[in-house]
Image (cartoon, rainbow, N blue to C red; front, side, top):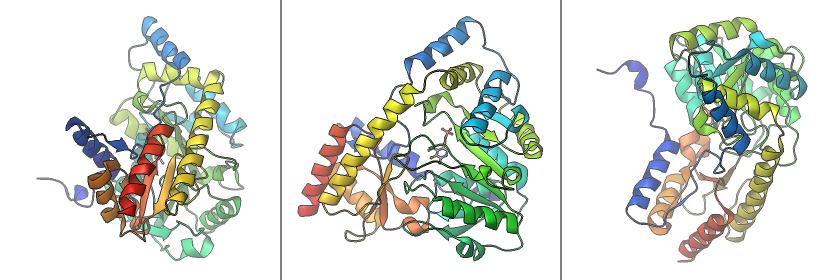
Length: 380
Ligand SMILES: Cc1ncc(COP(=O)(O)O)c(C=O)c1O
């Protein structure tokens, strides 16, 4: 009964781990969940107030499919000022979550059999979105190594259409260096490719400078920036993301949006507008807390002999499990013996085998308790 399109799709491993954690909790186990892909902070109060205000004013109907004008203008201004990318309202489309923007892009630019370069490991949705749109994923390893022109070229054929990058990165926590970005840009220009640059973790960064590949020469017309409010403002449930795309692509994406979801929630869009227009102090506070947690988890992991890449951005520690079996064995052991939930790295691609992803969107107490439990089982 089901379409062929669905046959290559895996269940989302990150959502699955969350469900297992919930089941164990319901059985009364003291579960520590390090699999979450969302900030554990409350959405800042002034943003919630803006949503209440929008409700009171009766903004409860359909809005323009591409998003409310004020929000699109504000996003275009942010992109110009912060990301140094020339953008105007017609380049911006506000979507129900960044995820929807990714699907709309894939549906707009891929034909059956078009190939898409993904850096391995990568956030689970990219591969699925490519496949749903009829595309074929091609993997280039980027874990502890860096990516360069040659490695990209080795995955390229006459059918290559798009390169997907995500920096700061989920799951590996790296931030692509300017040198890497330059090589990716050079490669895209040389091979006349599009680039999807997922910058959703841009603010959650620990010291390095965030650079958008779209700001490089000749890249604006071939780059689609994907971003959103879920991570920066702890607004995952509000479902507001956006794409900034060359006009022709933005128009294509809009058609998909018009015929699928119509528009993103009106109330959430007013909340997002307030998020952008108000003080960014709340973001600074959340990032400072993430940094404290990052320092604690990296320090603790090293102390118990688990090697972890130092996360430069996002809120994930990618931990090498080679000395303790592969990622799936290690994940199961943590779950059964310590009631600790993490995500096996192979969920994010072959290069993730022998790694597990710890999300540190968890309190410092939970991190410390978790590390104590892990040390306990490793010493057994
Ligand atoms: C790299 C990346 N992009 C996009 C998203 C989804 O964002 P949204 O909640 O806006 O759909 C996530 C969520 O985990 C992510 O990790």
